[in-house]
Amino acid sequence: MTTSSSLALTLPELILSIGAMALLMVAAYGGDRLTKPIGWAAVALFGAAALALLGPAGHGGVAFDGLYRADAFAAFAKLLIYVAAAVSVLIAPGYFARHATLRAEYPVLILLSAVGMGMMVSAGDLLTLYVGLELQSLAAYVLASFMRRDTRSAEAGLKYFVLGALASGILLYGISLLYGFTGTTAFEGVAVGFAGGLSVGELFGLVFVLAGLAFKISAVPFHMWTPDVYEGSPTPVTAFFASAPKVAAMALLVRVAVEAMGPATESWRQIIIFAALASTILGGVAAIGQTNIKRLLAYSSINNVGFALMGLVPGTAAGVSAVLTYMTVYVVMTLGSFLCVLRMRTADGAQVEDIAALSGLSRTRPALAAALAIFMFSLAGIPPLFGFWPKFVVFDAVVEIGLWPLAAIGIATSVIGAYYYLKIVKTMYFDEPAPAFAAADSKVENGLIALSAIAVSPLGYLAIPLLGAVTLNAARALF
Image (tube, helix red, strand yellow):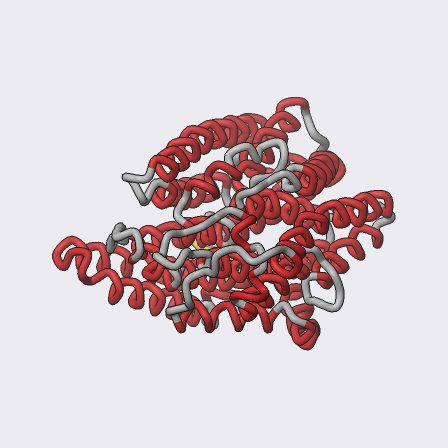
C-alpha cells in the first residue's frame, strides 16, 4: 500500500492533528479571548473526523504495513470517542467561567488526546499501541491539573502522572517480553507466536501487558488513582475521563485480547474474569460510604468496567458486541450524570459536590431531580430504563459459553451497586430540602441532559435493532 493510501485511512487523525495545531497557533496569537470560538471549532473538527469515518478510514483495511487498522471496530469506537470529547468541550465554558480559569488550550488538549485515542483503537502493532496511549495520557495529565491554582486539581494531575508513568513502565516491560519471545511487535506475529503454546516468558509478557491496559480502564487492582483524580479534576475533565478514554482503553484491550492474544484465550480469560469480578465487587462496596458525588461516580465507573469486561470473557464476536453495546450506553449514562453534577451550584455560583446537597432536590429543581433519577436508575440496570439492556447482553454472552456462575455473581453485585444509586434517588425525593441550586443558565447543557435522559429512557429500546446490528458488525471485524 502506498503512503498516500495509508494516509487516506488515517484521515480522522490527520483532521484532528492538523486542526489542533492550527487552533494552537490561533490560541497563541489570539489569547484566551478566543476560547469559545476555538471550542466550537474543535467540536466542528470532531464532526469532520466522524464524517471521515464514512470513507476508507472506516473500512479501508491495513495501513503503514500493519501498524494501523481502519476497520468497522475502530470506526465504532472512534465515533463514541468523538461524541464524548465534543460534549466535554461544549460543557467546559459554563463551568470555567465561574472560576475564571478557562484557557484556549483546553479544546486543543482534548483534540490531541482524541488523536491518541484514535491511534489506540486502530493499533495493529504494540508500538502503535504505546505511542497512541502515551499521546492520550500526556494530554490527560495536563487536563487533570488544568486548574493549577486549585490544590485538589494539582494533586490529581500529579497522582495521575506518577501512577500513569508506573503503568506505562509495566506495559513497556510486557511489550519487551512479547517482542523478545515472539520476535515481533505486530499483533498478527504475536498471535502466530502464541499459537504454538505459551512459554513462561510469553505468559509473563501477556500478564504485564494486560496489567498496563487494566490501569487505563481503572480495573481492580489498578483502580487506585480513579477516585482521587475524578474528585480533584475539574468536572468537565472528569466527565471526559469517565467516557472517551474509557472507551478507547476498553476497545484497545479488546483488540489486543482478540487479535494479538486470541490463541491464548484460555490464559487471559482467567485474568479478565478476576478483574471483572474484583471491579464489580469493589466498585459496588466501596461506593456505599462515599459522600462526594464525583468519588461515587468514580467507583461507579470501576463497577461498570467490571461488567463490560465480562463481555470480553467469552472471546467471541457476540461477547465483543456486548462490550461495545455496554460502552455505548455507559457513555450516555455517565455524561448525563456529570452534566447533572455541573448543575450542583449554590445561588452564588459555587460548585457543590456533597451528596447531602441533593436533599429535597425534587421540590426545588424537579426537572433536574427527574433527569438525575433516570441516570441513577439506568446505571443501576433497573428495567424498564435502557441501562438494563447492556447488562442483559453481557450476561447473555457469558451464559452462552456456559459460565453461568460468573453471570450469577455479576447479577448479585448489580444489587450491591443499586444500593448507592437508589440512595441518591432517596436523598432527592424523600429528604428535607437543602438550599436550592442556582437556576439553569445554559441551553447547551439543558439540551444535552434532555437528550441523554431520553436516550436511556424506555425509548432507548427502539434503538436495539440498529445498535445490535452495528456493534455485531464492528465485532466481526476482529475475527
